[in-house]
Length: 340
Image (cartoon, rainbow, N blue to C red; front, side, top):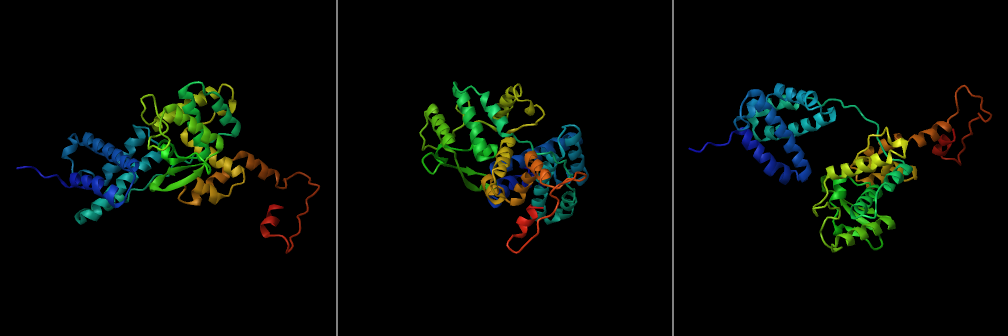
């Protein structure tokens, strides 16, 4: 007699085959992240219990075992608190699903859902100043095909402020290389947005597509590796690290910065902010779900902070013009406050 899958196996199958892709409509990348988190958990529990993964059931995953797994991530895999929280979010999502589908397991699931997220240390946002970006770009040998691709990749990343995967997903058909110049990006939650392109960037992308011998109206990806396969996020990380390391030889300010592909996105946001672009526009430009996410960039630019401190009356220093300008009905309250 054929043995039927147990509750855990049935739940995992339905969670990944129906609930996540069909009911919630999550992207492939999110589903893969959930998959990796549960795979790590199952392997850990199987090792702890000295059993095969296929023999595990719901009752083999109590809350204390989940907590032990989370500690294992930090102690042995050296994951940060942020990564730990990502894994826990996936586990929560799965057991929330189990509680809905199997009422008899509600109490078991509630204990797991009660496991709190750990407060993660907030790192300062790292970004590139304009001169630093120019220094990185100057290290790229544009006489070679790979160099022209890498140059186009980095400047497009800065122009659009796209997330790495958004950039790598760009197809020829997503580009509008005749005025009005723009690119169509597909972000988190399958959200679509249009980002304008500088004429110079459009020209570089046009040349890149011609180098590859691809039809500009095709659905081919535009950023490819040596095997004519789409570049990966790890590939982009490697390329950016390579050129940043070369630029550090001539640009000392880069030496103490922890740079990664998302740093280019941060750089775009800060440069837009310094150019006087309002927060709402920057939020739409970057594809943020909320302007609150964009507001963090208002605190990161050192030059803006210097200008702010220079505009404030200094303590312990005699100031010849110490009088506060009077407010009158012809001035807005914001203008008056800015004059203080």
